[in-house]
Amino acid sequence: MKINLMLLVKKVIIASTYFGFIFFYVAFLAKLSMDLKILYTSSNSPFYFNKCEKVWSHRGYSKVFAENSIEAFKAALKLKSNGIEIDVFFDTKLDRLVVSHDYPYNLKNGKILFFEEVAKQIGDNSYYWIDFKNLAWLTPENTERALERLDRVSNNYKIKSKIIVESKSIKQLSPFSRAGFNTTYWVVIDENMSDSEIEKKLREIKISYLLGAIHAVSMDYKSYTGDLIENLKSIPILIFTINNKNLITKLITYKNIKIILSDENFFQFNGCV
Image (cartoon, rainbow, N blue to C red; front, side, top):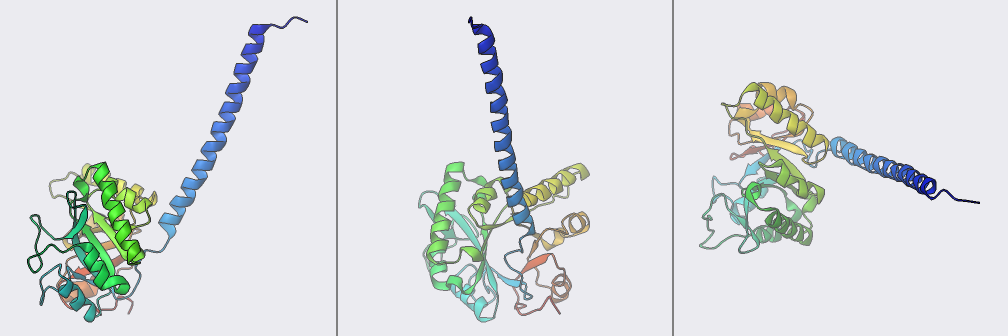
């Protein structure tokens, strides 16, 4: 019996294409199912901090001690603050997380204070809001190094579940979210932004939240008005920095506002009453 070689080759190609398509389709559905599961979990999981006492200390209790110092952090906890906001740089030369609001660094007792020392002394007695000052400008390689360093320190002192990492870059926050850290996007709405630019920014935030790239949005309390209140009402909000008693008394009752930073001792104000 003669075999039509060309016909056989064509059948093999068609069959390979068909089964290749089926394999690709099944793999695609499996990946989609996994992504939807992650999306559902990310957008429906409770925010990591849900206590009624929502006011945290801004850089520690700096009315008495130097901001971002061990003494200020301990003073805030003594006053029953549930959490502390802390400014951190990743120093690429030292390969360390440095506690400082500014660069050149603010020294503590003439020395650089490293986040590892804060974690060692405070431990899991507090929640941590890490304002990652230079994360948005790190290279991908240095971002990975910073993530590895934070992961190592947080695991050593068993505080990973109590940390939320803040940055002005959603892209730079994504690796931290994937690594199991809570993250918050610091949104800045410039007064010179057009309506279409604001709309685009809000759309980006909502999509990023749904996809699990971020877990919350943080902003200056002066920005929390109008469009932001309406458009971000389903997303956890972190507010800074309020020292007005009446304003805190008002905002603390908003269900989607989870944390408010303050320099004052309003740490026991109850938002559930």
